[in-house]
Image (cartoon, rainbow, N blue to C red; front, side, top):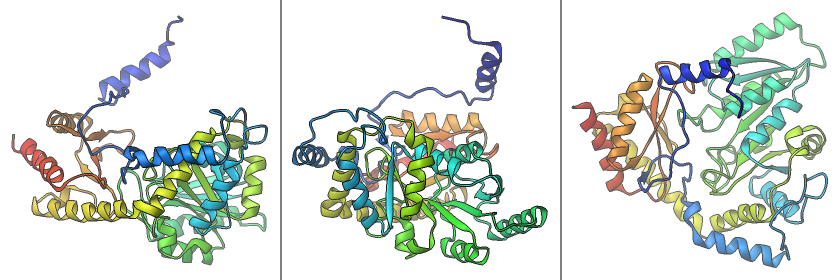
Length: 387
């Protein structure tokens, strides 16, 4: 094997020096406060059985897609799933991608054009940033959830560019932010978008299946007809894999023709697509009970944070994601190690993934977590700090 180039070696050395070198973790039997399996669907044997039944009902014996969707991979389960998703999430059309990363890459690299302007919340997913970088539009970040800063950036950019009839404005946010667990004022963003004739795009990755009777936060707020595009994912609360972009039929047609992450990749297997359908079927039949349990656990965890006097250290959140700020990579890793040794799967989020000084421990709550587990993990935090 060839020697790793010195430039690459130096980057690894730098990561090691600042305590941010990543390694693939091994599976453990610790109490899960780390995974995105918010509703516990990955553990549901009924979903596996429903997946097999769907494959049999549709006469689908293949274990692979055999090609991209534009060639031989658009098997019969795809249109059935997309039709269901559009109805369930109250959209005109849905287009399934292999992952949330692929969906964001395809959407943001192909839709905003050279004369266009993209304004994105500074805490959006890396996949959105990567998609924007691959496109030709000018892009600007605005302060987290700060509509006044967004307005300032839009006004400044329009003055500098002198907006023409061909200039489109895109505003990008998440409904639940993955690193803080908080939500923007989506109603205010819709109103702002109307005032500036802008297109609002909302990534619903951490809200899919949890809000709006198992749909998403946009639907819960009744804003689905005001949004240009939504990205939903199936690898979190839905316990499966893949993603979809929700929007108009014209947007779907455009993406089929220009989204390279859809065009140039092998499609999801029939089993994967059936698994997504089975997760949604389970959600409708049995899963709303898990949604209620999750929301009950979120409420309980927040109450216990206050009772333990930790409220000032946690980022305010009403979602399943709760973050304890522990400044410094070394300190964050040290506290995470203490919790892991105590039997809890809690991961540190280090810079440069988050800003320097905003390193944290990220607690993902689930429908299957018990009150005793939540009490113990918060107790271990206090025990670590009293050492």
